[in-house]
Length: 325
Image 1 (tube, rainbow, N blue to C red):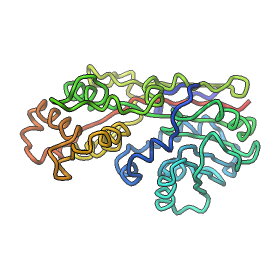
Image 2: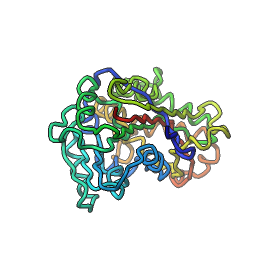
Image 3: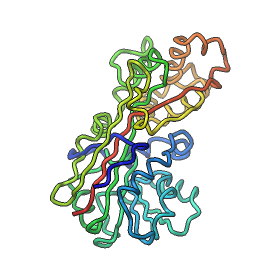
Image 4: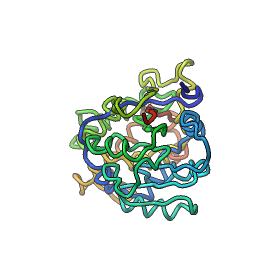
């Protein structure tokens, strides 16, 4: 039994609930913004998936579910003869097509619950990055069992709730703005009420609701990494498992927060609260950063140049690996 490589562990689990569609989530924010600000997957992640898969040749077929802007499809294409990448969002499919120049990859607007365009036992590896918490598994599992060949592989992974290393006070401010019940400022509610459910809860719980049916899947493996928000550090024993991290400027981190579906919902609910970039008095992200900057004297001393400050972010992560029986 092949174990995940030590340099690319992640946090994964399972799901049986029927969530809202992925298309309803991704239609709420800019596909271009999603591509620009979301963290990139490291090569170690793909090495782990491929080591588990153990493909006999590079002539197989990869199926990428919830492909977004096509990052995974492009990264894994050299290892396969054909790649089918699907997403329920037409905007995402259009963005992926614009970013991709690879004749082996076919992008299609479709969902994991209806793979009628995929032949039986024709898929060697099926993957889903940051998407599996939205699937309706009462329909998706039968479809995946049909299209993945015996001995083929499944790899689902996701990431959640990053922290900024070395700044516990900032991480608590971020947690409160995203999930807290209290107002972030007088008369301004947090983003807590605007996360799409149950998908966000499933992801925050490390996909423990996503369980490959044992009648159809074997050698099921899960690896989980949860960063310590209180210490805002990575324990030595977790360093190899913290595979999704990024050094970025605070201005880029601000852009990342504005890709949150919860922020999109908050903005729609508060159309009068315009961001300062739009000429308004400030929205929930502006206020969040006001509080973060105030909490760190070195950032505050930068004045209007605070967006150029560089920080290290690390995300909680999850992966599920399984073999088709």
